Image 1 (cartoon, rainbow, N blue to C red):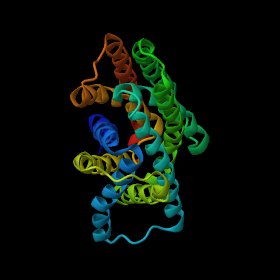
Image 2: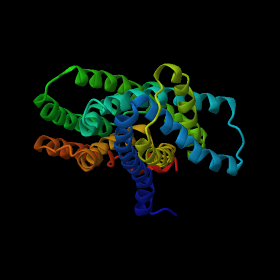
Image 3: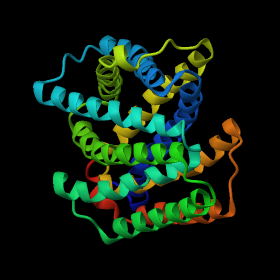
Length: 300
């Protein structure tokens, strides 16, 4: 018989997996910014997807689970196509904006996703989930107002912001697709098709956008590919076991990681407004854990 403490532990497992996935993917962003600056956003994005597929596909084939059904394969295609353009636009934005600022602006996506989850998945939006997301989003506004407001809005910054907004819209819908996908396929299969389909779609544009990769980009690209696979598997496992509205606010913790990695990789300073916004983000994430246990535990 499950005790209340055991139920809470089980409820927190998907949250822990989602938080770990965000951390891994944030580190991946730092490596990808390094690679994109060295060899171009398009080439870096394509190679990351192909390297990722090469890492995870042999494991999926070795497990011999068979080819996915037509319905599941359509979901893999849908998410792969979305992810291809979402990633390309985001990594392009990273070449124009500081890492932490880019992550902060992208947080509009989880806010949109909560309401898309209601429309496409029929999830009931609990007041705590709404308030948690609004608090987290308020934190991003504090950060954006404090950091971007102090700089000049030149053409590069405008291009970066435009690319980020486009990426955020795709990212919001991506949450909905991964929720459906995670109910029908395992993390290894999802990670395999996520990288493979995205890489295949982007390769179609190679004659127009491709460049010869420089040698110094291969190490960060290999690291980014491994982190992409690990992060995608963690997120798929989490979304198979908890509602989108519970996990989405934890996307905001990505800014904590972006601040650290932005300083470590590119010496991007963390300001007082960044710290203030971070407190709001952490507060929003904490509130998201206050959802009652049974609704989530039943899905494990």
